[in-house]
Length: 545
Ligand SMILES: O=C1O[C@H]([C@@H](O)CO)C(O)=C1O
Image (cartoon, rainbow, N blue to C red):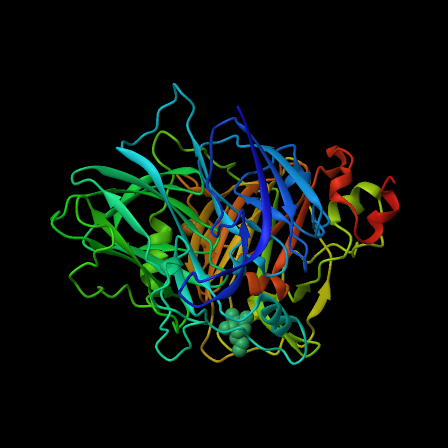
């Protein structure tokens, strides 16, 4: 089946959390529509950019784009962003059942509401290893800033550098509640129906599959439903060996399916809530209503909101990360060894007066001409041809203290991987430029899934951690994984999808601050760049009149 969509991208004043703000919407909506399809279907989305001030590019996060690298939707990597007035037609196959997402990959548009979920169901005749009564509900978790995206992008990229700070609100399916009490009702109106809390209606006794997407620009979150257990069954399109939790930790770029049974007293409604973890919160929790039929769907629960987990309980979050394993019967075993190991030391630095993020002391700068086009055309001066550094002298690096990192450089260099080779990446965290501070970074890989081999505290130890901490038996496959404070995360993937692919921190501000690398492999097998991917930088020379 082919699903055809036409999306008009427009600016809209929205009161998602009662505060009126300029958002970016798809056909008037933020979050955008859920794309629902069946495994093997083709999705065609005509994206019409009706923003008068800025370009657009949309990334289909978790869709590997096998054989369709030109459709990955990444500005500066696979395409020139689409100009105001222009249309880009994305066409790709959703080749695997699961829960995915889409979002802008241009500027800080993710922060402005340009995102939604992709729900891919199993084809007829194929069964799933768990049962539920209902699969109609999806939940988009996001964070929300009141200041304009232009101001936010400027703060992060110009001098003086200004950190954007914590978001004003957390949204559940695009709805939150800011405290309007001291503000003019034209700006913030607590009775605006646009900010009524999202309400999910359940029938007592039934079991629901909730598909949840982490679409925050900054925050790591915990999600909970008052008085109810959640059984985690899917992560990033892969079946999880089921485990029960009351607090689902979810990092930007991750998707989960959980099963929830409406098995509590049915005479009332319950809170659904989300709160910031991993960073000291300055944002109130996001609220929604878990509505037991036939109670009114906007009747507030009689209870005060139970507190979420402590924001700084790193151990609980690591324990959840470790609990996510491939489901028995669905294990895709990883290759037993890697052909190449890349260690990426994650550091915060000052570079040319701005705060930046670096990998092995290189803070990435994207070229103006997309990599994949430059590579196809052999334009060797578009990006730095020196190979990106595969390691760092991290055995001598003190990850627990503020380091100067004064020899940081900025580069557009890439990692070239032998096609079909097996690659390990060890992400190593460190202290930021603030004392006693190490952050959580959700790392996302485009074009592939990876096996999550392990997590550990402190500095990675090549001789013992591989033997003692790697899980080669039932590792989950994912496309996004957290790197916990002062810890390491190891992953393995096969470079089997021809193209040039981003691997980056999914915190939008960190991406803008250089926290990304690129993996090239088999790009000689990629076809010629389509016209619609061109128009910027050197590609103008290729455009047909
Ligand atoms: O990149 C970041 O910069 C700030 C802070 O470190 C600047 O003081 C912060 O919280 C980040 O995540």
